[in-house]
Image 1 (cartoon, rainbow, N blue to C red):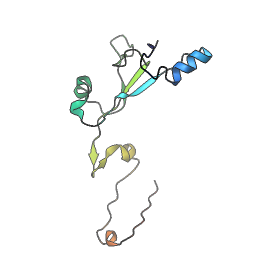
Image 2 (spheres, one colour):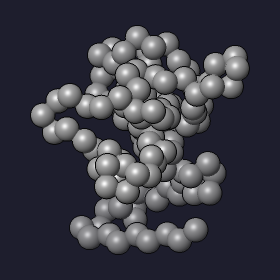
Image 3 (tube, rainbow, N blue to C red):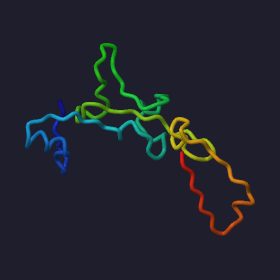
Length: 119
């Protein structure tokens, strides 16, 4: 059960849906546990975790950890910090579905170069 918001913008879309239809939708927060700016400025719990894939935390009884959202959402998804390969975020490789392809330097000397790859 979500706690009502008390700030100036009042209800989010899920709150309006519940108000107008009586349906209490599942709400998911993917912002709180996501890399943003400098990790040193993030909450100490976020800095302490080291996950390899998107995760939802549960306690020993299997109950979803309410997170830092003070009950405003049902679930909080934690995302791993970005790792880089070839100076690009590794998530761009789609778990190995995409393969890096290095171009020869002679190919890159052109003033205009259009490269299209399909996978």
